[in-house]
Image 1 (tube, rainbow, N blue to C red):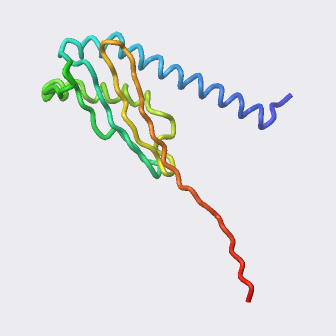
Image 2 (image 1 turned 120 degrees about the vertical axis):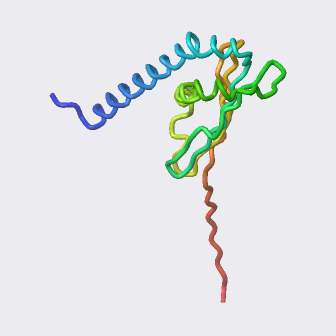
Image 3 (image 1 turned 135 degrees about the horizontal axis):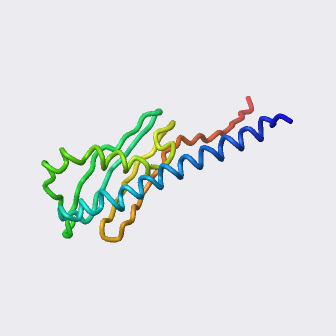
Length: 137
């Protein structure tokens, strides 16, 4: 018995969700065991990443490393050594499709003290309002 298109699609989506969860679990583990301990050594309490996307293209626009007083930490040396690694892990937390069509933007915050990632996300969309007018002549 061959699966129907609907059954095939359900299987495909279930596999996709499993892969996404596995990637997210890997990112969480790397943050917890590798990255957060290193950030704490450098006195970093929070990492804030601003992201945006639209028209099928998107990225993390910038990452700021903050101390206990919410002030930027001078990360010139550290950033050169670790920034791409941290950025790659943070990408795993971004909402799927944030770059599609009208896109979206937001802020992702990693708190090294609570070991939590928080995303403040805004979606963009185009709204159309239709109307009809009729005139008697």
